[in-house]
Amino acid sequence: MNITLRQLRAFVAVAEHQQFTRAAQQIHITQAALSMLVRDLEQEVGLRLFDRHTRMVKLTDAGRELLGMAKRILSEVETTIEHSRDFTTYQRGRVTVASGTVLAAVLLSPFMRLFHDQYPGIKLQLRDMAEQDLQRRLLEDDIDMGVGTRREAHDEIDSTPLFSDTYIAVLPPKHPLGARDSISWKQLCNEPFIALSRSSPLRREIDQHLTRLGLSLKEMHEVSFHTTVLAMVRNGLGVSVLPANSQEVPEAQGLQFRKLSAHRLKRETALFQLRHRSLSPAAQLFKEALLNYVKTAKMHAHTTR
Image 1 (cartoon, one colour):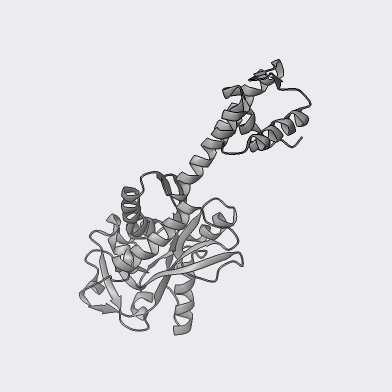
Image 2 (tube, helix red, strand yellow):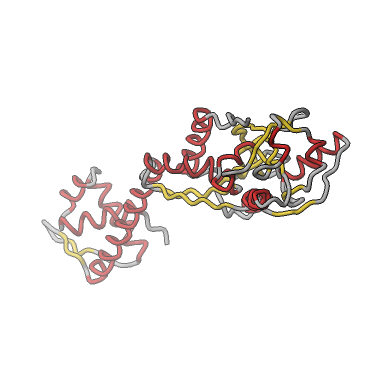
């Protein structure tokens, strides 16, 4: 069976006007074309839908039964079209983005507040997680995009650069190294070190950097999240190295942050998305707005003593 929307619209118009002339005028086609659409519909359903008289037509029993269904179908189609228009005009939509805890706090949270104010019909969902899980969640189609440390990506994932910042030393309150304006990697390696887990892209960058310098970390505690690193440093369990924007989270209050004096290490932050999956209009708008926000907010501009 091959029933078209044009046939249903023609059928409903004739049923409502009980004649072909006015029905044809309503849907802006000729009377001959209207008659053909109704006749084709009757052939498709295998039933006569109208009893035709000289000046008017009346629905048959089969026609009356079909009329209710036809109206519901057309109504649902119109609703779907209207919803689609809402998506393209950004009046509705859904965006799911994921990042590590620090980027969720210092970048995405303030940006999402501004985005929501401008596009209140778009529902935003932020998932904070360990950075090493971002690409897996993308490949599982669980999120629209992720924001994290730029690294060699999976073949099916594209990355768009957002900003870069430097790594800095993180010290407990009143730690003796805090008397210095800058600290060397060698000095840090002589201290108990709080590190992110080996699966973390940040940890891999630090390990590779230390290998190039011929250095290695002393006694270590390994944790999964930046906020745990900051808490352990605050409690005097060791020192650490984190991206400069870690200073901005509430857990950083009271800690000492110092520049690394030589062989500075930079962290590149990027936006990740699936290569062969088109973003929805809302997600594409979110991406473009985030790129613009990063440029104007100068996310790389962090200072330490």
